Amino acid sequence: MAPKSTVHKARLQVSDMDRHYYAAHDLVLAQHPSETDERLMLRLLAFALHADERLAFGRGLSTDDEPDLWRKDLTGVIEQWIDLGQPDESRVRKACGRAGEAVVLTYGGRGADLWWEKNEGPLARFGNLVVIDIDPEDAKALGQRLVRGLDVQVMVQDGVVQWVDEAGTLEISPRLRRTRS
Image (cartoon, rainbow, N blue to C red):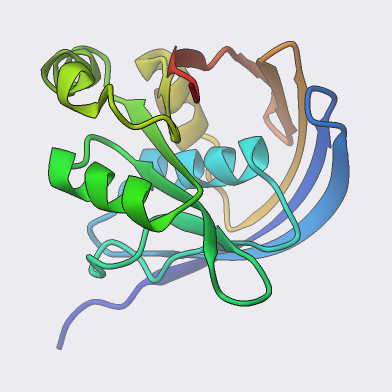
């Protein structure tokens, strides 16, 4: 019998001054047995950075045809496709073709740098692609904050994220490698 996912509940309060978005979200995150705590928390960070009433988590690591997060309009058209890590160039091309905006949130330090060096040229033609990098120390610090019932307040201002939870305050400065053109 295969191991089951671990379910985490999170209460996320988002105050995004850059996008003028202010809302609370009650979320359920399923952690695949092979998913690290760090990656799960980065999915929550990605949600906070792109929070919207219609933003939802995909079915998980075992599903190739869905992103980590996505936002669809009321007719089912994909408005935003968000993947974490270092996806294959073909997956990013597919995301850019299927969604109004494709976002890749990289992390992992030198590995993420090498991924970007390899893919920057081939992906340059996609005007709807955004690539954001999270510092490996910030990703590690986030992973260490995972608890069963998360209660998190996230404030975004001038591109800087203030993450506040029971462990205290963490400041994260996502680096934009590429913005929409």
